[in-house]
Amino acid sequence: MQTLFHTLGLKSEIMKAIEALGFEEPSPIQKQAIPALMSGADIVAQAPTGTGKTAAFAIPIMELIDPAKRVVQALVLAPTRELAVQVAEASHSIGRNCRVNVLPVYGGQAYEHQLRGLRAGAHLVVGTPGRVMDHIRRGTLQLDTVRIVVLDEADEMLDMGFIDDIQLILDQTPKGRQMALFSATIPPRIQTLARRYMNNPQTISLAHEAKEVPLTHQVYYETQPRGKRDALTNILDMQEPHSAIIFCRTRSEAADLASTLQARGYGADAIHGDMSQAQRERVLGKFRANKVSLLVATDVAARGLDIPDVTHVINYDIPDDADAYVHRIGRTGRMGRKGEAITLVTPRELRLLRLIEKDIHKKLKPLQLPTQEDVAARRTKAFMESLRETLRAGAGQPYGLVAAELAEEFSAMQIAAGAIQLAFEATGGPVLPTGPVSDGRITQADTTRLVLDAGRRRGVRPGDIVKSIAGDAGIPGSDIGNIDVQAEATFIDVRNSVASKILELAAVVTLRDGDANLSLARQKSTDSPTGQQPKPKSAGKPRPRDNERGRPARFAGPKGKR
Image 1: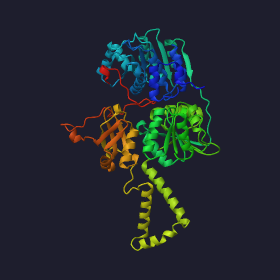
Image 2 (image 1 turned 90 degrees about the vertical axis):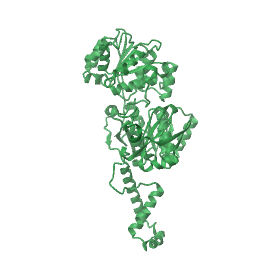
Image 3 (image 1 turned 60 degrees about the vertical axis):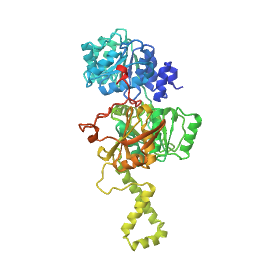
Image 4 (image 1 turned 180 degrees about the vertical axis):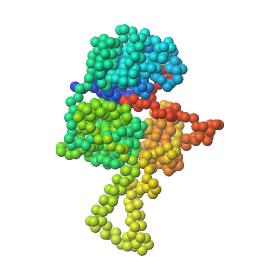
């Protein structure tokens, strides 16, 4: 019997947050770590990035913290500021209903912001060892009220030379506090640290019994998190799968991705744990009948599916472990057929991929992401092959009189080129380049920035925007580039060639709670008296996202400011 979150005895406030995040079932590390930490035990857990380890310690922390006491009760140390921010965001999302203040503390950020958060009464501090030590030396961070300490990515922190800082920090915490250590590997130095600072820790290690799927061709593409959807659509255009299951980690991600694919013209539907049995059967019926070719699913929803002719399995979100990976890709390559298993991997997930490869005793083949030009070239080649077959079969003979009449005015080359152009336009085929070939990606120089007067506070989602704009303006979703959803506004990059068409035909975007207006974003010359364009909050380096969800967090500070 599978362990579900509701069997862990969690507070109702935490359960509501978990349901809102779309988590359906604890990952293997969560199943073992959460009960152990909630019982008060110290643990040493061998778990890499991507296995759900953040929630494995954040959930027990939220259970432990007393929000009425405005003091630091929990401390999480992370090796990098990026990871510290991700952990803080994930922890905030889990504890959002518990009135718990979460504060990230890391180098490179102004001290004043962190000092405000500490004075406001942060309950959980997530920081890098160096900046935490700085606050201890300044007397701005007191750890004598800490009830639990977590070392995240402990092996990386030791490799980066933080051992002295970590020991000094741990020496500042109470002797009876609880401690958890999460690490991808457990070298002797980790064991020594555990013996010195932990009380009879429980050891948690994920064991795998992996099996190879010999008829499945397994590859992976490396992509940035913000480019995953464009990467997926290019892969789909290149592969043109007859039937594919696309796996997502959460049900909310599955629903959003299916909506985006539908808006971009793909036959897709979602199946996840929020659906009734009747809804599930309806979606599966369409998939089995080839009325939709793409089934976007979570692991829980995909259990028990019996679909023998799946040609592709695509891991949009990399699975948590080798067992889940093998279970997923085993849905293709059945009954002697060959299958394709494709995994999208972000740079931070490469380490998890290597562990999966080690467990399945197989190296996945890395491939270069296809561009729009690659897709156009493949479609052109397929069209030429189809045309050759038609000519060899003599199927074009009834149209000879039409060709003969046109030949009195045009050359054979002109007639053929015109006919091919009409065929491409009628079938939505590729538009062949007339100049130098680019890489097919929408670059900043190719785009016009539009602004929508609605954002996160009105529940704006990228998939809704793509669906509305593409449908009203009659353009393909690939003409829409980066979508930056902020609190009160949303910035949308579109190809220069379609910007005026969008503003003419899709200036009013339909949202779930009403309409919003789309307009041209302000340019540098008109933004300010100095002619300089103010940067949006998310300008510059993209904010890191936790791999278990994608929402930004609000941190501790005066009046809830970030």
